[in-house]
Structure formats: structure tokens, C-alpha cells
Image (tube, rainbow, N blue to C red):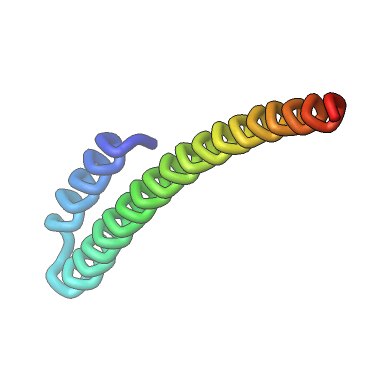
Length: 88
């Protein structure tokens, strides 16, 4: 169920709740309101997690790039050291 379907179903539920007697209506309106609030918090949490994952992916790419550059540099320096040691 996507966001628009959820909002549509919740609005439909709220419409149905208004047709109930006042005693039952109050209780169900409260539950529907709590459901809407929980859904919003859940949506914000998922959004925050997605941002964190995006940041983590980017950080990993930078770390892999740095590791590859360090390996290339290490190979280059070893080669220079071998050449210097071989010439002496």
C-alpha cells in the first residue's frame, strides 16, 4: 500500500466513523488519529534511514577509492624502493 492509498483509506475510515453514535465515535476517532500519527512517524523514520543509507553508501565509495589510491601509491613506492635497492 502506497502513501496515497493509505491516506485515502484512512479518510474513508474517518468518514465512516462520523456515522457512528457519539460514544463509539470518540474512541474510534482517537484510534484513527493515533494511527495517522504513528504512520507519519514511521514515514519520517524510513526517510531518515534512507538518508543514512545514502550517506553510508557514499562514504563507502570514498573509502574504496582511497584504498585503491593507497594501494597504487604503495605499489609505486615499493617499485621505487626496489629500483633504488637494486641499483646500489
